[in-house]
Length: 523
Image (cartoon, rainbow, N blue to C red; front, top):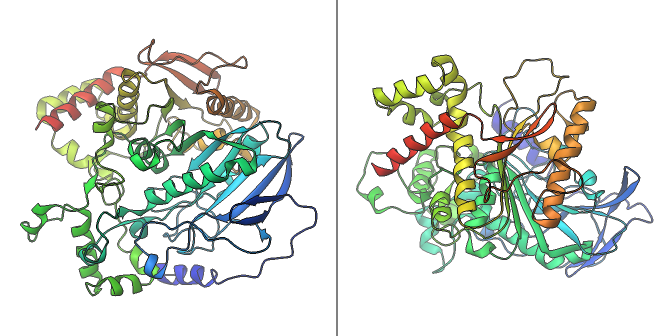
């Protein structure tokens, strides 16, 4: 089936559906916009309430497509919150990838809340931002079910945000009609900010403490956490942050660039020029009306590039500068931070497989390449590990060092748990493989797990919950995790045999990467 046909079938499923009858004696929560009727579930003998598909914004459709999100209006009568909402428009994805089931829709700005039924005092809140390269994913996937975490005394929130060209896009025609001073381009990030404002305003209704909010995310969600750490609009909306396999060295694309007007025939540099080039190639008239009339599925082709810079934007209002620059200048949120990576993130990929890292590889001098081959023990080791180091491992160490140097509690980790029940050999823990351990949702794992995996999940989720409570992951008899401020370049490694404190692995390789980035920046 073609992509258009697949998406058409999905979109047909998004027409308003009649709510099923609400079972009696379900939990009810009143927030400023109305009543929500949730559901109850039991985990480890603890009753957990859930409220799903809760709108935090008006549907970003019609005149609201490519506009900052608008808070959801109030409703009348009890609203059934027993089912998740539609996922945001996206191409089909292989495997789970954080993507929930169809249907999908532009009307997707909803969130889900889990909270223990018995609450004696305000609880810390953990807000999850999903990954998927700003192209795929949702807060509805089974891996992100918050029941287990909530059963241990936290409120869990997962959310959807606009993706792809619906979430990260601009065009000269949109700019021409835009009110002066209105933020543009980073609509997906604006959605996250509005969701955090919703949490601030309504967490107490679910037993949460709006002053104790931890944002955590993986991959693109980890990038989002760092973006929120430098976004002025998000300041004060969270008190702790966790970055799982984010980037850190990425350079955001400007919303507009005067050089684009002088570079006819060349690859456009700015988001606005890239949007104009896409519309021209798609045969869309250069008017705001025509752009907003484009069927959502047409916006998916060709796919924009996350790592190539199409979706990481410095819009000048929400995100004003590169993440690294903000951290280096001490302009990031002064909050405790957990940051880390997995031991074999992209071990099956070479730099040439991922734009723009192939260009970095090609631009190495013979002397640089020789030093790298020596550092990686030859071509085979280089091919297996250099991309993971370029994209994830060195940038995580770099941001951790900067944040610690700015005086903030910083905890670095490496995840190296590989299930013994897996049939295929793996060089280590691959990208995104930590998620079911963080959420303690091994039953939703895409591969088989065993008792050792459950022990690792209990441990890792325990560290995350303790961090959400105290801003320090230590306590409750677990191995002490060092803070980088007094103990530079020490991390906690999660392994099949339990946790271990050790120096940053393969520091010599990361030093080569750091030097390479430094030389490129100086050019």
